[in-house]
Length: 405
Length: 232
Image (tube, rainbow over all chains, first blue to last red; front, side):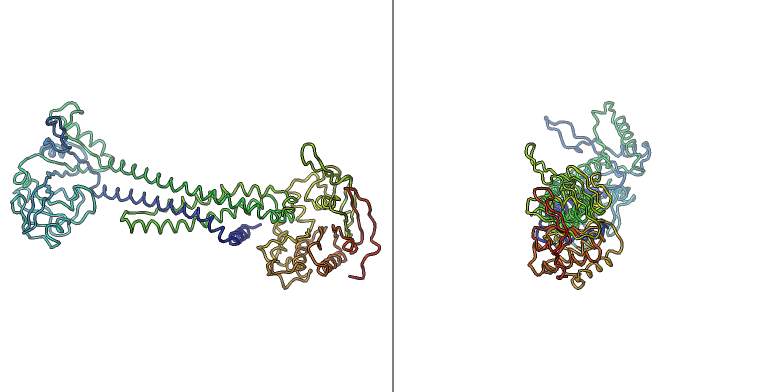
């Protein structure tokens, strides 16, 4: 019997019991829909994390001062020490291989006033290289440049949220603000980066590093160094080199006592993808269980169908159907059920994941892989759970089957 | 010789201790072109005999050759193949498949035998039973007599050596039953071998030879002298 004919017969058999077929398919529909939607949530999370981390800059190492030594038994937060200096930055730039550029930063909080508005703002003293190292772009105006640094110029570049909070949305370029009562001229606005978590550039006011050290914070230490490396392959070596260089510069010999911390963006990315990957597998796995339950539903109905159609099987055998013909017929039927369920499930899964992102604002991302997986899985379920009923049907003796009432 | 059965025995093993002998040594020859009725009460073994003659089942002992083929050496699939080429079945309950049109039902043996020109041959078979205008009807849109005629078309479609009809009129009223018997008789006139199983004498009267079976043995086998030839 040709495949087309077999499929046509299977479709008719499915259509003959619409309610029953529909309910049976529902199990697969829910299962496949859940798998597609769950995996899309996982993939969406993974993608937004990757985007965020990559948005911080490419091939980036971050050097932070270690925690300040215990004061009365209380260990201070990471980055609270004052061990990192401009000298360290210079040394890294000149003596470590594959360093492209360095962004030396000194950040802190300060009172910021514009007209009647008064906020406690996050201030970051930066160099001209910040923009390239941290992968930020300007929306309006200019960024801080070398001449600003040379003369400790009182200019500021602000993030998008500052525009909203301090300037109530008005164009801030050319306006004057006061940081710790020192007047600054706003010369530029950064383009929005989106939610990059805490220390988002959107929430920050950037001023020249020299101005920050000399006039605002009054210290010459750095709170953070962004080191851009030439290519991803050189990252690990650079971490080592910077580590040894800083240890010797700080007069330390035991790496355990390092007063700084080097963070590799690649490592963070890997850890985060592992976390989101695990989440995806977990969600998909839970949804997969409902697929299996749906498959058992198909097996159940196919067994009922074989019993109901015993006479039909007997007749088919009497007029010449071989075992494989009967096997093929019932297998096609169960695969048809599960594939139709799978297709509807995919549509519902895609629609569902859209709804989820609309309703909750979480990013979802339907991958081709998850659709193929669900599709393949549902047809595999049709075969797996269809094979036993089909074997039972094909093994029936034609006489017994014809006698069956 | 079309059918050559020698000392056929069939024993059903119901449990390890209980067994029932349905056939106790049946020897039977049927030639091509014959029109035979196998008669007997229920439990006489006639259905068992029909199943063996129809290659639906195998004998416990004895030998059976259909058109020169010894069936005892064949496996299930070879038997199915043999059935689809050599035998056309007509059942009491018609056994048309409900979700197929009359024509689709008729060509089913051709489909399983993988033969060519299925549509043409199916249409021809339906014409032979005067059911051409019902080709696209579903079985439940046909009367009992029409359903049985479609079933006969299905039995004819693969041009079998043997048509085996198991109580073909059992589910029909007298008039429709008579029409079916006339149809079978005319098929026989056209050269088909028809073997009919029945427990009713007036049905057997349509045939040319009546074999009576009782308790698993043939008790009578003679030409039907009082044949209802005038009904043809």
